[in-house]
Length: 364
Ligand SMILES: CNc1ncnc2c1ncn2[C@@H]1O[C@H](COP(=O)(O)O)[C@@H](O)[C@H]1O
Image 1 (cartoon, rainbow, N blue to C red):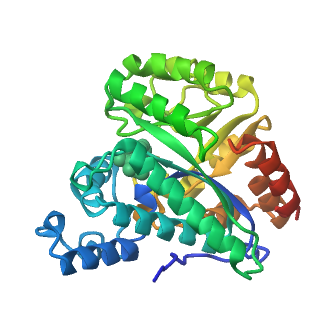
Image 2: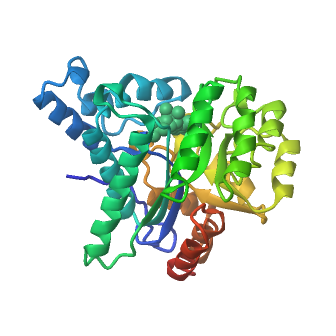
Image 3: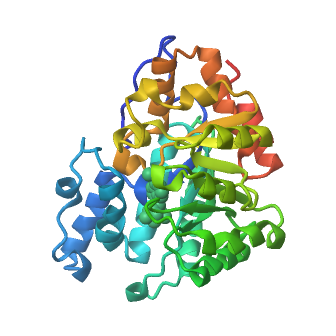
């Protein structure tokens, strides 16, 4: 039923990148659904003559396997125009979430923080709170099945981060904050800022992020940071560094030298770097070897965590992200293991989970 993407390239020392225990902290739920899984949802809905798919092409035609060249103008509409029309019932949400969890676990992910934008589904009588509860139930179902299985692989722990979209009005963002409060310590561990970086008017969201840590002690804050030129101005990035303040930053592409210094001076900030997403969506100039991974890798007091962003769209599982780094930046086996372990200190999942990861992640 599930079909994890396979694109693992052997590294210099023949590391089994899939077996390497990995931490994934930057994965958007709806963008992580495989095309095969979307196709299965489409087939079921077609069979039921569901209204939402009457004029909706088959995912395997709309997003053929091998097509990964979405850019920032074609990428965001894919969700509103297409994926959200397929995933619009409780059944589809549960089915696709289970598939995403299965794919990450099969790829050797041992700790996952999935992020998602709470979305009401009025036609299915699902509120935003129901949306979150449905995903949390799927996670519990997956974790119970894992604990019963005789699989020798370490099990994958999953937590949820709720996304505030840059398009959100203040009341909409307040609602995400209050949902975070409602589900905090019940599977939700953090708050994210994401969405189309072309939307540059975001100052109105400041009070929500400033309130987050005050009102929810222990909550994690991660922000998409300098993802595009339009969202990489010093004005925006200086403002974002005051929001929370953030524990982790996503993408970190368009940063002036001054902002880079401020990030470094903070110390211990988690940097969620998504190589294939950035290269395939043309968010950086050049190819993998030109990725800013190489620059940040030299900075010793930040914690780099590789992420897939949207593996269903960009087609590169986390094991492949590690293989790419080994290949393009010449990391040895022990350096790859040390890189994978950098994520431990910046998870939002608590001390006990950090201890579990310290025990099970490879040292070399
Ligand atoms: C280039 N990478 C990215 N940059 C910014 N936002 C992104 C993103 N990839 C995904 N999203 C955000 O996540 C939503 C889909 O997942 P959920 O419905 O929330 O699970 C998208 O609508 C977008 O707002």
